[in-house]
Length: 228
Image (cartoon, rainbow, N blue to C red; front, top):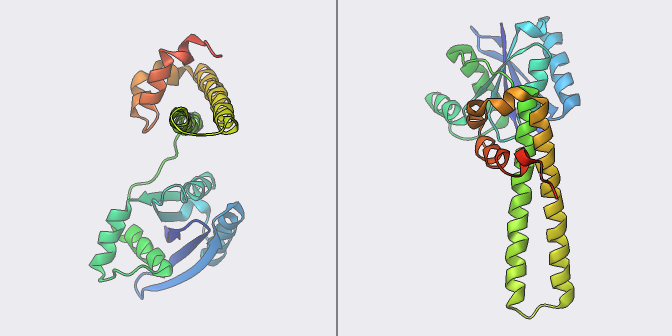
């Protein structure tokens, strides 16, 4: 198995392949954090190792959302992927006496972490779960915007704002309410298309950020289909 550590940032990915573990030889390369960069990374590794995708094990650190597209791309290509907790990687790095952050060194540490600690393999969420999470995240964002605009309208009633400003706030609120109803409808239709999600309440509750929101609307707007 060929182990490659990857340090991920918003725009780039820094990679380190453990070329010779006995002599601690490492080969590094940087790529763009986009689909073209992912393909270039796979080509680079396969060219230098002569390995198939199934013989590659990539070690990534969980970095907000920036690692997700790469993890899915590598997994789809047939490679093994591990997404490690940043705290665990940091403790491992400190055992080497390294505390300062340098991207290339981070990727090397992640490669050694993968080779010595054998982290568990990452498995992608089912596509229907990913779509549901994205819909729910957008719904919550719209609800937050509605609350903010409602607060502004409330303040406007007790302050000396022009009619044009008040009209603008009400217009934005109306648009946001329409968008909220559209998202509720999309969530309801998505659950109808995937009955195992709709019927498995326990599964919904286990999805971070999804369970409470979906449960709230399955007995309300979503389940009744009373969209306005």
